[in-house]
Image (cartoon, rainbow, N blue to C red; front, top):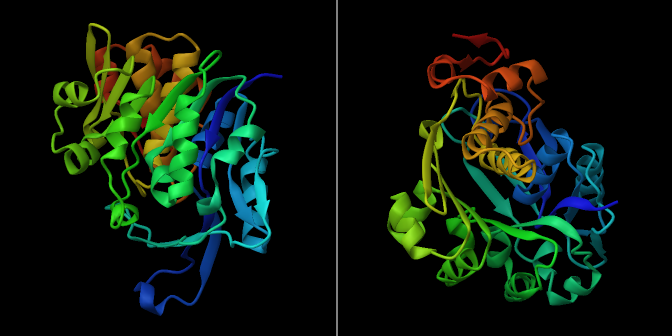
Length: 322
């Protein structure tokens, strides 16, 4: 059966505090899983699409936990490689609504050892191949793999690229390659804060000038909304009002919602709204992947007029208020 979306990139064991208080006094930590590309895959599976995630993990308990968690979300993990030498990466996250500080322990990880030979093992008979700028920063061999994937014939698929700027990963690497990759994609997603950091502009029209070739450009403006530029269309769609528990992972959820609606042939407005609705599932939880919103609620908001959309408010309990 054809895969709808293939997502490739590193996922790691994730530890979050298991009790309140200053992080240096926390004695109990909860292990879960996190990674931009697998987050997208899990959200896509939640939306009923056939999603596949490919990466490399270590031959260790963390690697087994990562693969098991992604598989349990309904994602095909048959393409994951187990590295007998390198370990699975991990990171630690403090959790709060204002933004969660993250400490990464991923140098020398199994995923950083991915190289262009992985291309020989990939079935690219998919509808969308989703990649991010994170993979390009992990190692020289990962960048070679990315360039090989971008150069592969796109006979059946569109290539989606989320900038996913991680400044710590680029401290000793040249981030100018991100413009090269973005401009070679078919669909580009970027936060305006990311674009400002990497390309020194947050204006959608200027970002379009910097990456003129992708058929679809989405600029995310955080809690304000998102702008779609496609052909002669430039459309801004406000975000939903959401009681935010924690923002980490919301961008990945937005990407999944947008891609799912794009594959369904939805209108520009519904594609952006689908992104915002899926982002809301993650904004209302401490996890990187949330739980689905009620289908009736999703349908009503997708069909809402501008005033109804603007009046909608999703609380932490999932209650819609207008």
